[in-house]
Length: 155
Image 1 (cartoon, rainbow, N blue to C red):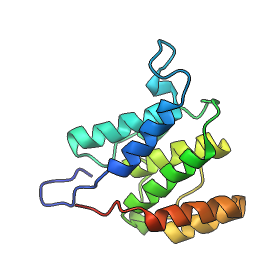
Image 2 (cartoon, rainbow, N blue to C red):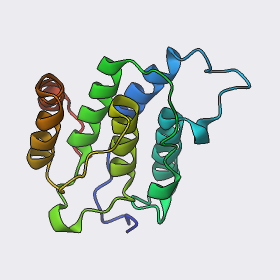
Image 3 (cartoon, one colour):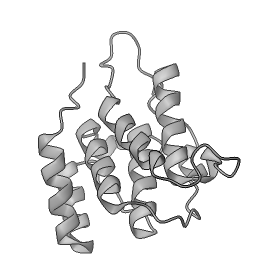
């Protein structure tokens, strides 16, 4: 699905800031060893930039490109903030949820960075938070609190 001029354009400002902050504390950032396509956060930045440039929300096949074997240590607070940012951008697709949606790609990447696996997304934020709560109550609460205070509403 691509967004046309009549569709709502999503504002990725907060999410981009969160992703940039994650990169800013990485020892590899700005070095020859920084390969964005092999980094969970770098991949996330690539897909967000793709959306901003092309206006295409679903990137066919991109879910298979998530670098799930990136084993760097990430700041947990920054990851949960980024996950909360993706929740705020979620369009509540429910049955129409697509794993190749830019929002889903970023959320899955942050989940891999946090837990080493992704959490199935039911297309609804609150059902998703129930699944997160099963893994870690504190993280689910943190995501919800950040979700509530973030303003990423569509422009």
